Figure 1: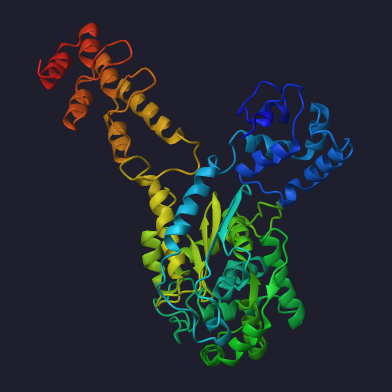
Figure 2: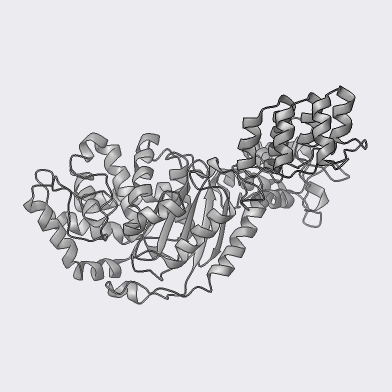
Length: 523
């Protein structure tokens, strides 16, 4: 980063100016401010900084054309007054993913590795989808703080298809509440294909994430409105989730899907025969509405922001618009976890451990609660109707980061090869070493065992070269020393003062510990 606006990371000055170093004249470059924000993942089209960018443009336009675009501290402070908190957090590495460039590097690597995978085929049962370029591929990410990155065909529009079921379900929950909604649709995995002609023991759809359940959701949405207004309401909800960018509608896909929808019509008539629909439901209008919702178009960037809105308890990170309540999102993510990946949902929950929803357009929406949303689009599908590349990207992300729901049980470290994206670079390792040294000094063997299970190296050193063995020996914790030696730590590490654990034990008069260490060191 150029020196005129290097991030200080802390600073003693109050406000946003304390985050940056000024040039020799005490002035700052607005272009370099944008570089700092972009590196942190805050992009120039972020609506939160629109007014700041406009203010900077106005301040710069007042300068003579021949002069470099530099602002005084007062001009800079005035221009950024509405976004000081966001700018400070970005500059100091305090956003949801502090080391955002590292995440970008990993996503770029994963994209290049996975794009060579040409397994699977496009959905053939809907003619318009069968004509899509099978090799298109995009990954887009948005954190709960609005940090964004996209790679590949991230600006190409595609139909939501079954991904639309998530928002349709959320809308019904907001309108009617879970008790009413689940009088009409269950919340158990079906164990069958997404369009299987099967229902639960009560004669209801198994869950809202399969076709029958999504048709039922559409029957519940804004029943008092006409067809056009109902569709506009759903499209507007998607727009709000996606940060205010308008969504599209693919009429040819809608017509194609409607003309090849015998199974969906069969599902609808079967539910009507069972008396499953709310009283007064117009079945044909409901099915048309369902096909329309599936034909809403977004790109990967929009879908990532929508996923981040779910990760952020229903609040869009880019606009701070509370689209859904946290309770609604909780219910939706629960069913995405158990039912969102068709009849691959159990395997996905086991290996990936995150809420997700796929669609036969090749879209996959992945939610990492309280951290980020990820959208992957690749039209090549597997036998279950899930994106082949989408699932592979998810696998590699979970291999790289401890974002699986139950990774908190195994932690991070060299043994897992995983990193915590929520921590600053090296922070995870440092915290592990600090915790280990503290536990050793206290003789807390259970905590040491827990840290070992989390892949904290038991031979790691602190700033002074002191190890857990040094500290346990100093305090005379014989069982701790015995355990550390039994797992193979070096019995004679040397700290910055040339001292070994044996020296510490002798100095403190811990004879039994000293004998253990001497034997282990072959002395």
